[in-house]
Length: 188
Image 1 (cartoon, helix red, strand yellow):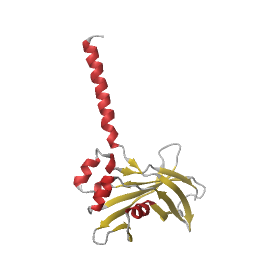
Image 2 (tube, helix red, strand yellow; image 1 turned 180 degrees about the vertical axis):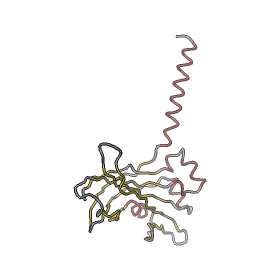
Image 3 (cartoon, helix red, strand yellow; image 1 turned 90 degrees about the vertical axis):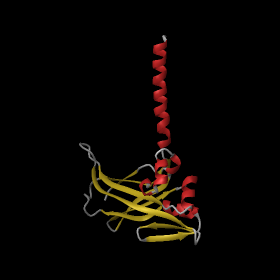
Image 4 (cartoon, one colour; image 1 turned 45 degrees about the vertical axis):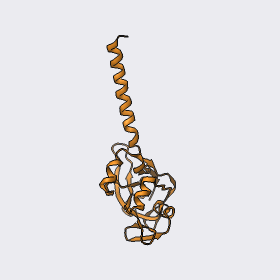
């Protein structure tokens, strides 16, 4: 093997190694799903899910310094089709936020107009991950004989973070937190 071929192969290996190494920090910390179920109550599809939310040390430090953290619960109902893309029936995102109050030494977890104050971070993390009887959509307009799928996930919203924290998020997996999409089949 001559020197030119050797250096060409070495440069290619270094380029591939660089791109593989550069893509590693972008991987997010995952929020594991412990349990989930979809029920239809009085014509409304309701979701019950339990996530194990564990904040990384940089996120805990930011929260203790007064930076609010926002989480998004995203869900989408689709009707699978074999001949084209799945038909999206319903799609929505709901924000949850957690804030620390240094005056009262409590954490406040809010979802829409519902707010709860808790004394410890562990309880705040449990509240964020507890999705209980969340009404999603009406099943009245759905075909009663059809098969549908509900996909949902919980993730940290990076766009609502202060800019000083947002930019390191692009390269730091400690500041990126998301669950995988979970899909449940249902019949109305």
